[in-house]
Length: 235
Length: 238
Image 1 (tube, rainbow over the protein chains, first blue to last red):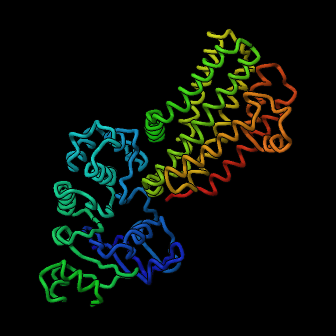
Image 2 (image 1 turned 90 degrees about the horizontal axis):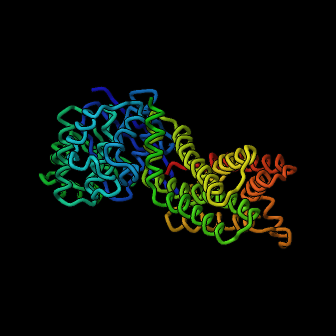
Image 3 (image 1 turned 90 degrees about the vertical axis):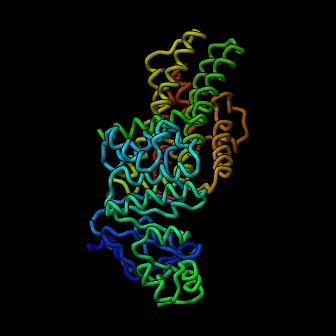
């Protein structure tokens, strides 16, 4: 598999605190990669650094293309959209800023994929929390990027809304779309991730497939495995 | 094709903003018609016309536009734009042009109302001057709004900062009253006030006092450029 993004010895300080410490990570084409770890571990900062939004103090990040602009779709923790526009117009606008003129058929496809068909004509601002998250994911998908990054896509959502978003990610995985997502929900990680990366104190302390991690820590429960890693275990 | 879609949808998003409706349309129209009906004096009405146009522009640019920018920044929209094929500069230019378009339409509407309701005579030079102060003032005040939006961390701070900025600019100008007898320190502040230069330029053009027009226009352009440069330098994606 081709490596889409490679992070080497990344160090980054933010507001006087070192957030990333010699962090190494790679994202491979066609895989679903889960980045897990406690709050404040540096997951979102890592995503910002991977995207070039935050500049590293030292280290290197290389990507499959010289210019990632337009090649990546991102859903940040706070859903990003234009409040004055309805769902369809938001999709049209974000496709256009990525150089793509989408047909109504393409918009319908994405809306269907993200379970938003009924909300297509509603003002984005008036959507429920779950719908806004799904709109943010739809915006990430609309220009058909090579890589999709989702930062806590199911955080603060009710179980039904979580399941809908899980099904979107599962469908992306089936299409061999490269997805990176962060999560605190180990059930979601277990179901969706091909590979898991545990970030603690700004560095990757453990990574591997679900089976590899569970075997290494002698458990069949990912929550227990998480606690073991969090409390100092590393491979 | 793409810039057209981007411009039209950003404009749609901006025009549906209820703050824009209140601050840039309802307030200046109400001010102009209300005070203009009360004071039966052509000279005052001309001055009021200029003041109402500038109120529309400054409120729409500093308060509404700044608030819009801060909200988009907090929502992560600028981060998405940074990752997109469209440059952030083009995105910001689209949003400024969309606002300038609505400011120009309101200026034309106010001029039309001045003629129809109060019988004001606005010549070509006067009309062009009012459109000039709308455009250059709009750029200047938008830039100020963006500077504040880059510093404000939340809606409360944005609201307070934009009001603390726009109100003194209005009050320390001669848009609605003369500053001839004002204390020295107010007269000094007014020399740094783009609203004052825009007001003087507009009033001068309407009342045929052309001597200071070039100076006022030049000062307004210089202050707009300075504010635009600061806005670019202080711009934040998050």
